[in-house]
Length: 438
Image 1 (tube, rainbow, N blue to C red):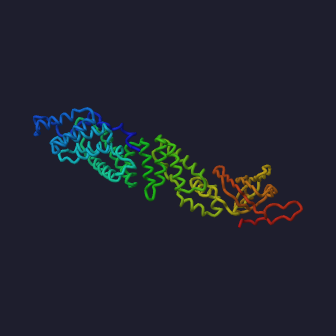
Image 2: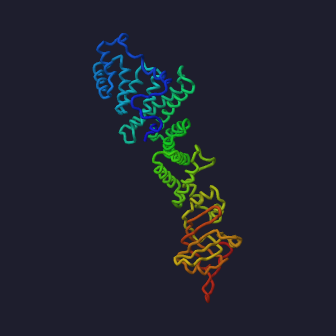
C-alpha cells in the first residue's frame, strides 16, 4: 500500500517539476565539476566523468563503486552520491536510493535548497523501500518520519524562487508539503503511533481532500488509537469508499466488521443499515453532519437496561435515539412484559398463528389504540387462534422487526399467557389480566 502511487507517477530517475522548481533543485549540489577548477588529479576527474556519462544504470553503479574504491575522500562526493541515487532509482533499488540521499544530506557543503530536495526525494521513496514485512521497518520508519518532519520545517520557511510566480510556487510548495505529511503519516502508522499518523493524514487531506487512500489510512489510524476515534474513523473509511478507493468492496466489509465489533448490535441487519446510512451520508461530503455519531457498545448496553414503557416510548419517538435503541434490542428475547389488544387473528398458516395487535403496558393504553402496531408470530400455541378482536393479553417473544414511521414492531417465537386465551366452548374461562402488566 503506497500513499503516493495515486498522487505522483513512479519515481524512477529524478523528480521533474515545472521549470521554476529548478532554482530549488539548483542548490542541491555545487557547480558541476570542471577540470580547470578542480584540485583533483586528471585521472580522478576523468574517472568521475566516465561514470557520470554512463547511461546504463547497472554499469554506472559499477563505475561509481570503482571510483569510490580509488577516491573515497574525493571532492566530487556530492556528484557521486547524486549519480548513485539516480542510478539506483532507475534500478528500483529503493533502499539504496535512500542510503545515498542520506549521504547527500550529511554533506556539510549542501545548502538549504539541496536539503529540501533530498528530503523530498527521500520522502517520495519511503513506501517503495518499506512495507509491513520489512525486517528493519521500525528503524526505517523512525528515520523517514524524522526526515519528513525536518522537510516540513524547511519548506515552511523556504523563500519563493525569484523566477517562480506565486501560483507556481504555491503548486510546488503544496506538492512538497503534501508529500512530507504523507510520509510522516505512513511512517508513524508503521510505528503504531496512530495519533501522529492520523494528525498527518488529516493535514494532507486538508491540502488535498480528493485522496481516497489518505482517507482510508486516516480511518485505520483513528480506529487504531486507544481509545479509538470511532466515528471519525468510520467516516474516513466511508469517504474512501465513496471516492473509489481500490478494493472498495473489501473496505466496505472491513467497515461493517469494525462497526459490528464496536457496537455488538442485536442483529447483523442493524449493522448493515448503519453502514448503508454512513455510506449514503459520506457521498460528496467531506465531513459528517453536525451531531452525527456512531453509538458504542456501552451506549447500546444502556438502552438494553430500559424498562418496557421507556423502551416502547423510545422506539415510538423515532430519530437517533430510536435508532440506537433498535440497535440494542433487535433480536432481544423479552419476558412476559408486554400487553396487547387483538385486532385480527390469522390461523391459516399450519406452522404458526399470526396476530396483529396494539402494544402497550396498561389496559387503558391498549384500549385507547386505534390501529394495530405489532405483528406477532406464534409457532407453538395453536390455542391462540381462539383470541378475537379487542381481546387483551400478555405475551413474551423475540423482537425481530421495527419501523419508525409508521411505528411497527414484529415479534417472533411469541408465547401468550395461557390465562389470557379464551377457554374452549364448554370450559371455564381463564383469568384475565389486570389493568397493568406485572
